[in-house]
Length: 219
Image (cartoon, rainbow, N blue to C red):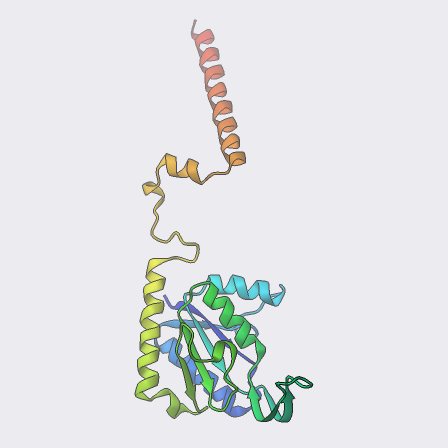
């Protein structure tokens, strides 16, 4: 069965962006993964952040695909301050790349971060964090270099290992017959424990009444 992985990517605005995303999705599927992207192949009536969080819990790794969403021909950074600086020809990705990368990191997902050449390097698509940022051109040849192949294969191994260790709800390796009564009781809340005790007492009382009635009839 294919392993679900979360893919953070903005809605493609150009043919080259769509082709690039489709090529990565095809590469993932060929490697035994099922890419899940909000608004692309996963949909919900819930609020976006809630749905993203739930979807990520079903996934074992995340891919961040960052490409140009906003282009700033000229502007100012920290306008009006002593640190004011001019901006020229700056390209920014969708802010959802930053949000979803942070959420994936919190859930301990192995991260594969792929960024278009020329993007402004900041936040979670900046080098120096717990993952490697790959800067590529939006063409198929970028996905066949030894560097990309090596990084992709390493990410695949880490996701596959994580999928083997932990199920979606963290209980893949636990069989019901292996769980002791003590473990079940320890996992219960006080309300659940009292409910169980009440049910057991009710059952025992019923057994006692039935035994008494049978004894009376036999006698």
